[in-house]
Amino acid sequence: EPARGTAALERWVLRQADLIVVDSAFVRRQLVGNGIDAARIRVVYCGVPQPAPITSYGGGRTVLSIGPLIPRKQPLALLGIFRRVVEDVPDAHLVWIGEGPLRAQCEAYAKRHGLAARAHFLGRVTEAFKEAWLRTASVFAFTSELEGCPLAVLEAMAVGLPVVAWDAASLPEIVLEGRTGYVVTTRSRFIGCLVHLLLEHPFDRRSMGEAAAKRVADHFRPDQTVAGVRAAYREALAT
Image 1 (cartoon, rainbow, N blue to C red):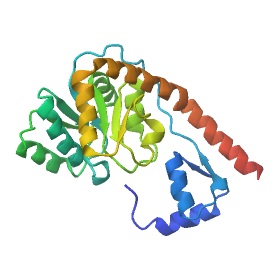
Image 2 (image 1 turned 180 degrees about the vertical axis):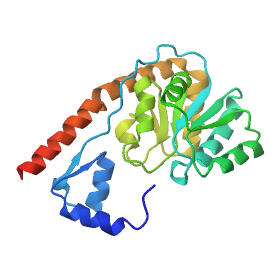
Image 3 (image 1 turned 45 degrees about the vertical axis):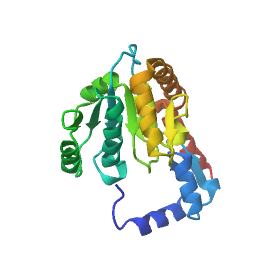
Image 4 (image 1 turned 60 degrees about the horizontal axis):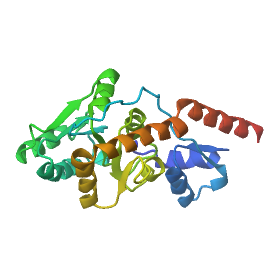
């Protein structure tokens, strides 16, 4: 979450910078909308490691999400969506990896609505444990609507998980609608896409997952991030 009281300092730094590196075209648009010259902004996407991709797309029914349990990530919204999903997919499970101040509220919601045995909040975990869940899950759901370049989405795609996310912020730059997952504008379609991937179409899970892994390998590698940042520094030093 943004630190409080830093807005004035951030504006001063942005005015002084020769070049500004941002992690998405969405952030670039935000800066331009706040008066920053687009000619001084360079987009360099984040990169994530390339694990061995999933090789088995079985009949699992697990929705995975990763991130801190904070308002911006909207975990309660995902719980509401999942509550509808289980009406069509009664053996579905939701796993959330990450800790935060909304955990007690999320667990209370799950208990109140009969989801305590199906919605699992695992807190902080090791990288190995997280990767194991990425490989076990059926689909990755992401309900945040304000992101620069969300690493959790990239990590899910890198192992070959299709993603369902809102058509907001930088998500359409990363998740290609109908090819590596779905970027949706309504709650009903979010629910429908999860049900589709969980219940009816394992072939789509495989084809979208493979396309997602390829997209990360082609466009979101760590070496590409390093090269982009180095190029920005060289450009700034040359001016």
